Image (cartoon, rainbow, N blue to C red):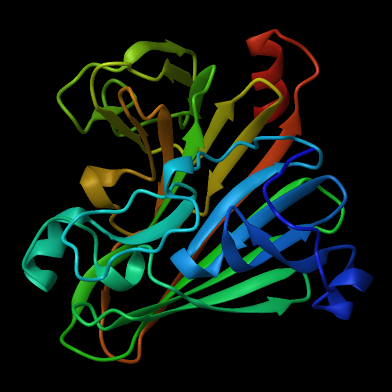
Length: 317
């Protein structure tokens, strides 16, 4: 099996082995000093050189659920460039995007320390902790704890924003996970949504084959247009050929970005065939010395049938 990484050379955390989770250093798609964490059922790959959780998959799965831009293997972001380097995988940004202009003088690309910059990484008992540089415009440092459950096919990412200097800023934690072409993307809507239709369109284009059946909203990837919808539900599911990945956002009190969105789905047109499952935390006015934290949970469920409805019942039970 050519998985584009050399065999692990060392166990980095004896505590992790005792906990049922292994943490090993690997070379992954021409990036060195990466980390593979595994619990016997699922495994995740972290690439500190670009600050990403690049893959989550069932053990033995060739491709995995996360989308990776293979044309950028082994490359680094050019800090002098005003272009966005779209590596794929999982990352976090400060929400809402409308606050970016006031802090950094532009609405794109994303703030530099939040996206694709090298991070410090250390092995922990059940995973890896990564720490970003301090973003010079927001005065915020990002710390992420990527861990696998010892007994279940679950990855948890706890994301912290630490406000270390500068004037106050009102932000929330925004986790963006790029995933491969799905059979369907589904969102479990709340029993009573604040949105009249159960969701809100955040871009002009109509979603592809959007359906609502009871509390279940589902859609496909639009091949021609950029599409984005938001909901106040906190559970989503990506349905792939080998597994379903359920993504759960931690919820709490407060005002949420984009008019009250807890989860958002973006679908990218051809030729880059990926979708984004995004979770958002409530907005908080951060002053120097403040910190906020949210946890996103990813559950990988092997498929046992081709029936989409049966797979979704398993995912959302």
